Image 1 (cartoon, rainbow, N blue to C red):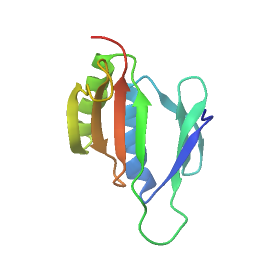
Image 2 (image 1 turned 90 degrees about the horizontal axis):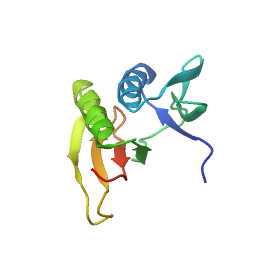
Image 3 (image 1 turned 180 degrees about the horizontal axis):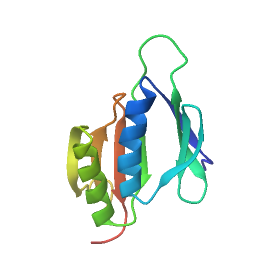
Image 4 (image 1 turned 60 degrees about the vertical axis):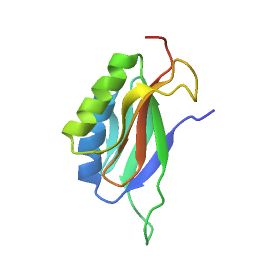
Amino acid sequence: MLDHLGIQVADPEAAASFYDAVLGALGHRRMLQYGPVIGYGSEEPAFWISPAETEGPARESHIAFTAADRAAVDAFFAAAVESGAEVLHEPRVWPEYHEHYYGAFVRDPDGNNVEAVSHVPA
């Protein structure tokens, strides 16, 4: 349904450091950069960060990245914690979503709820 998603960040350098780490753990990388605007992906950029251009506080967004397996969710979580992210939920199965939903949730430097999720059995 989505071709790509972009979010605005208050501190592009802090956000880039965070997303370099957590998306790298999921097998993605910086693919394009135009000044402070960065596109991440594996085959083409699908997730973008750019400096905030609007006044006032930002609203929290929830962004869930697909992980290939539970080990990738765990690697995402470890990279996020190492980057200083606030832990919202440690990796675990979320049976209320479905029996194989394995996810971890953290806050990025801008306060967004960022998740890595695997839908495959253990």
